[in-house]
Image 1: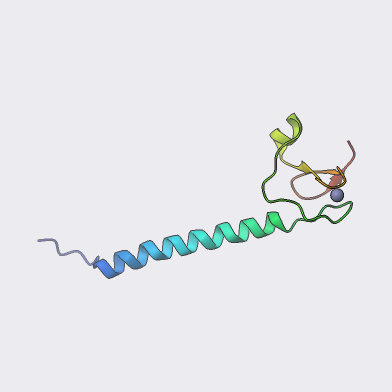
Image 2: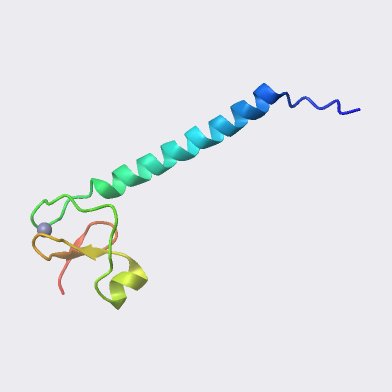
Length: 80
Ligand SMILES: [Zn+2]
């Protein structure tokens, strides 16, 4: 009566595929953010940003932990 085509192997494959695929996306996203250098001093910026003010909280962007250069979420430096 349960004549579905979903064998346990197929289900396991789908779950593993979802985990691997999701992990790959997260890894790529982490690398993109983690490899963004400071536009001023070239310091590698941490992947985890902590906004220092309301604008950073609203629009993204951060400040370099080394030289204090502010930049937007695309890594463009900007005047304070
Ligand atoms: Zn810097």
